[in-house]
Image (cartoon, rainbow, N blue to C red):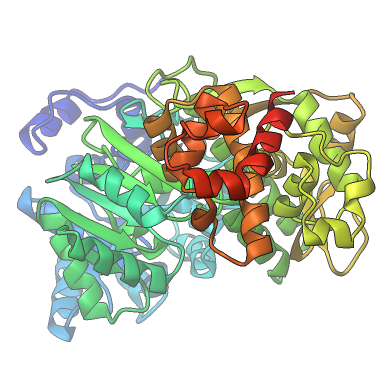
Amino acid sequence: MVLLPPQARVLLKSVFGYDDFRPGQAEIIAAVLHGGPVLAVMPTGSGKSMCYQLPAIMEGALTVVVSPLIALMRDQVQQMRALGIAAATLNSMNGAEENDEARRAMRDGALRLLYVSPERLMMDGLIADVRRAGARRLAIDEAHCVSEWGHDFRPEYREIGRAAEALGDIQAIGLTATADAATREDIARRLFSSPPQLFLHSFDRPNIALNFALKDQPKRQLSHFLEKHKSESGIVYCSSRKRTEDLAYYFQEQGYDALAYHAGMDQAARNRNGDRFLREDAVIAVATIAFGMGVNKPDVRFVAHADMPSSVESYYQEIGRAGRDGLPADTLTLYSLDDMAFLRRRIDEKDVSEERRRIEHDRFSALAMLCETPRCRRQTLLAYFAEEAAPCGCCDVCQGKVAVFDGVIPTQKALSAIYRTGQRFGAGHIADVLRGEATDAVRRHGHDAIKTFGVGKEFSKSQWSSIMRQLFAAGALRTASAEHSPSRDGRSYGRPMGGFALTAKGEKILFGRETIMLRGDPLTRSERRKKAAAGLDETTDRILAALKRKRRELAQEEGVPAYVVFADRTLIDMAEKRPATLDDMLAVHGVGERKVARYGDAFLEALAEALR
């Protein structure tokens, strides 16, 4: 084991003001100082940059840092200069004079850190200048970008290996927060001339609370989340530029200091908003993933995802922007079946090899399972990175916000209904079949005559939708394809038509060869409101559902809105009092003689049926 020189701790305190290294830093810095290629995989916020900054100071020689974003480079340079360390960046946002000054300082041997993009490294004879300046090492930040197996592949990173060769006898080190085994192997092959010394540290970020929620009025859900974090800085990630702009405006109307940030903005506006977020307190950045690697703000207290990320790696990288100071931070991820289908379709439509497509589907499946897991979120997340952990006690599952139950029987009912209806219908239709709802569509297709019609009355329509969503996430269902018959390999997802088909895993569960646990969704906003008002038990809730079906049926016959028949409050009171006669019905809130005469018998019949 290589020992760290005593001078390292002295400079750590005198230059950076830290009493001790963060976990893993000392070993990596010792290896960097010893020489030879190094690849370090460390969680976001663990101090990766210290692993090349401190050696540059100790040796008094130039380190060239390759970074993917101008905003991040500018921020790092400003931080280094504030510490009295000679640092500069070469980038397209600099004026010609600033770039000339940086190159002059490098040639004169005055620089310790030069930050460049991978494109800039290969331009304007920079390689020759770096060699003449006696550069000691090349540090590649966000090294996963070099690998097509990584979650953020950037073709320009492929040139870095060639640059390292051209620089001759120079040490190369790679740093990243997220790289699975395949990605690490690809990084090593593309960046280093010989196998690197690998440092693989825990991915656990125990200070970050993980929370997930099914989308139900997402703007309100996000507003409720932000209310818990007033006067704090945070990031809200969105899947599109338009959604970014819309949400930023919505939050501004709610009184928050919210800024949009996405690649479609002009560079000056993007830099201005990025700088404000980095420098001011209580600012919310509403951003696409273009904002991801440019954030070096230690006191980000929360990260929310308005839409599902594309993989566990992306999710981990993005939530890692929170709590870099080690203090508690909070996260919320909103997701939906539509998100899942969209992301599956986007993978299918990519012009990539089948092997690449398979890997992307597998990565997305892992993220979908994280959304739907009945286990501790942190356990599930770390298991993806091949780590074991005890239940965290602070995620929504551990805190009892999510109920878990044996899902074999309801799953078999759902899978059977999907199979018997031809493996081409969506969650809403299948839920109607399971609940025995003889809708026009159900009758038109003859699905009121199949064996699974009405076998699932114990669950509401939203509960059945949740079960099917979980089966989709678990790989037991896939979207039906317009182009081919249902695949049995569980890999081919096709282009969604809104319908489901069974995978090989789904067939195993259907025929009792595999078990499955399911989780219950938290109540929707409207369900919570009704439950709070009514305090309904399970039986009363079932009766209420039957009364609502009867109300809908009568309203459709008469061509009037449902509330004209009876208001919700009336049905809740009826479900609780359970009248047995027309006279009893008059004691129900909102029921007069006229309504008793018109609807009394129909609702008494519905009550009796529900109580059997």
